[in-house]
Each structure stands twice: as structure tokens, then as C-alpha cells.
Length: 223
Ligand SMILES: *Cc1c(COP(=O)(O)O)cnc(C)c1O
Image 1 (cartoon, helix red, strand yellow):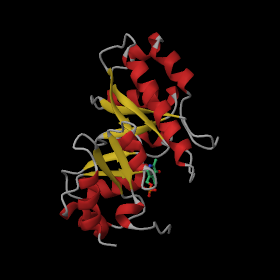
Image 2 (tube, helix red, strand yellow):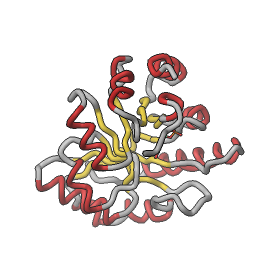
Image 3 (cartoon, protein in one colour):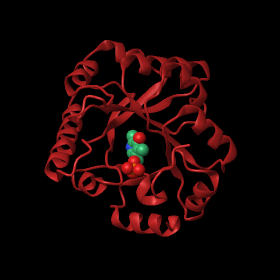
Image 4 (cartoon, helix red, strand yellow):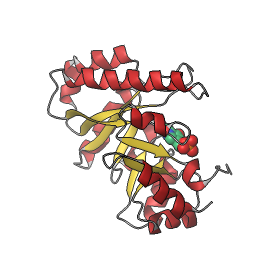
């Protein structure tokens, strides 16, 4: 794998408005440094402690994106520095992020993860739940989170039309939520969708952030 070329080629295939988040979970520092040398600054991790270790070891102009399921008791490890949490999958987690943000007087940027795939193993709010949440006053009291959009993962499938339909559904929800009367700290501008296998479809359906791991770094080796 030539990490640098992969990044350059990927960037060329993305619209300028779409951010490439290089998913570096399980990847060692040398590989992250190669990506960094190619100018990559947005990296995605799915475990709080691994992200903290890498944050401490890597250059400090990297923007760290949390993309994996986050347990409430791990939130405190990442709130001081995390750039964006893509994977807020419950109101309870949002409250904990708010609480930890308040403690250190920082507003934490978050996306709400929406369940769009058919598999029921994937975390997230249903479209109905998020609509209800946005009409609910309890959200208005969370002053230490800023919700800037939505994240979703399509079904892991070769069926491209199905994947497209799921992304399209998420985009429609995103557009619908924009029309709601939202508090100042909720703004629908980012749509995080697309991974190595489906980012091309995601871009066509309006993604503003793709999360790409194996197409940059090669297959992950789990320790
Ligand atoms: C691992 C992961 C990715 C990247 O997956 P690839 O198929 O390697 O590109 C993207 N999003 C989430 C939420 C992930 O956990």
C-alpha cells in the first residue's frame, strides 16, 4: 500500500466540499505519520483510549474524529481535545458529553448517528427518535454540546441500489431537520456518510465527510 498516493488519489475523487477523514483505528504511528506527511490532518478512531494515546504521541495539529460507539465512562478521556464525535447514538451519551464538556468549559462538536442499515447490530437513533428529540425541550438545555449534523452507516452489502437508498434516506432526514425550529447550538451542516466500499455512492448522495480506512491503509490487522 502506498498511503501517500492513496490519499492523493482519494482527495482528487472527492468534491472540494467533502472532508476526507482517514480512519486510523488499529494502525501504528508510522502509518499515521505517512498519511500526515501527505498533508492529511483529519483522522478517525473508534476507541477512546487508543485515540488519547495517539493524540498524545502525534503532532498537535491533527483533528481527531471519534467514529465508534462511545461508552459513557470513556467520554472524559477525549472531551479535552476531540474535534468531532460522529457517533452520538443515545440521549444519555449526549448528556454525558455535555456534562464532561461543562466540567472543562468546552463545547463539544457532535453528530447524531442515525440507524439507516437493515442490520440491527448497528447503533444509532431511528429517524423518528431524532425528530422527536429535535422537538423536545431537553435538548435546549445542553449548552456544552454543539450538534452540527448526522452520521450514518449503510448496510454492508454488494447491493449498490440498497446502499444508495439508505444514504438518500439519511440525506432526506437531514434536509427535513433543517426546516425545524432549532436552538442555536443545533445546526444541520455536516452529513458523515461513506466508507471505503461505498464512499462514491455517498458523495453522489450528498455526503460532506467520508470516513475511509482500508482504502488508505490497507486491510486492518487486529492485534
Ligand atoms: C472502521 C470504520 C470506518 C472505515 O472503514 P473502511 O471500510 O476501512 O473504510 C468508517 N466508519 C466507521 C464508523 C468505522 O468503524
